[in-house]
Amino acid sequence: MADEEDKDEEEERKSLYTSPIANPIITDKLLDRALKLLKKAVSEKKTKRGVPECTKALRKGMKGICFLAGDIYPMDVFAHVPILCEEKGVYYCFVGSRYVLGGACQTKRPVSLVMVMEPESTATYSKTYEQVLAGIKAVHPYM
Image (cartoon, rainbow, N blue to C red; front, side, top):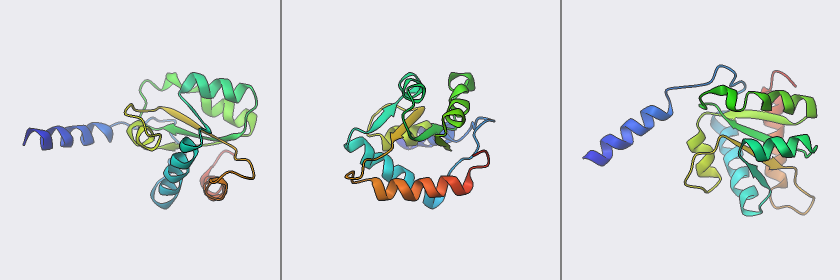
């Protein structure tokens, strides 16, 4: 009984806050594809996780897709990342919760920012990467 109440409280806490800069937030089919892409990229170790690691990769000019959590507070933690992505020509999008990103990255901890590196021609996730990139291009208002 207590476990069910704890789960309900946790679900409620997860969906309470959305950052005002969280645009575009992906949902539905595109979100499912993005999470599938994350799982495949993590298995091939082609991801950068966390704000410092992703910022370093962006400054070095690495290409890929950035997935940011939309519920990070305070937003100053990664407010510079969307601007940096736009300057470097890297597509980015927001996912509703950091817990969803953490689950897709196969960690027990919540993740605020994940960058999936651009696949090589032999990568198993290249087709999924192209589908997600096309979806993000369609919904992205700034790029």
